[in-house]
Length: 138
Length: 138
Image (cartoon, rainbow over all chains, first blue to last red; front, top):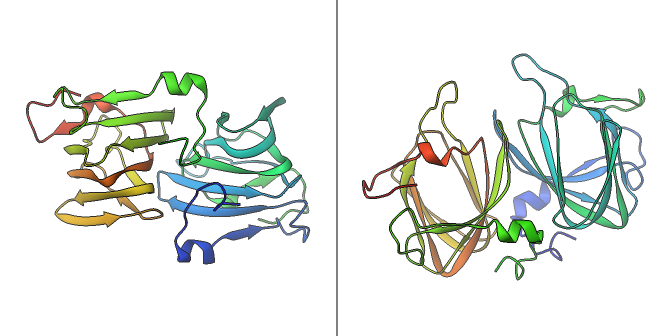
């Protein structure tokens, strides 16, 4: 999917693609495939690759120390997603984007063709994410 | 160039592409074409489109108030650039990237085929950039 979208990865980046199943063991339905380009103390950038209908379940990024929580912008590159943020629903296609404030509940699901979504954010601290479903372990 | 690279922009984004000639009036030789996706207090993401041989002249992003200065990661999407950072030269092609610390002198020039470069950074405050060439006005 990434190559079809014209996105070039190094061999090391291909090896390091993260398959996040959120501890549920149903990756194709609930999960994400993640390429992390950079994650410094201040800035993070990723590509999120999603299978058709794949869901990233509801969660928020809480404050950690001096950090008010992760701020994320999702920009759809290919395909489509349904993004739910703090009670509002967004249907996003190529070129559409939404910025999610820190500590704000959100979830998103890929459309019938899957999706590639660029994420631009402050530092990622996945281990501190708070999921609504108590079965989820990040 | 963006469309050829599979990068989709909204009509509004196309209208808002910034042509930065740094006040020198020689855009094709010294300049950048810039698409700003997002620029919040904390995070900025852009695409930089460069003509063949086009130069972004030497500059740095100084501290501003509590901000230690802009931190940038440049990731080449298509084409190639020569990037000079604090005395070190980098030849970057598709999939290659370098992170530039705050307040650090750098310049870059596109190769013979031009380049598209994704920039992931902290907030952009272009008006505070410090250029080595005193004729430059940002």
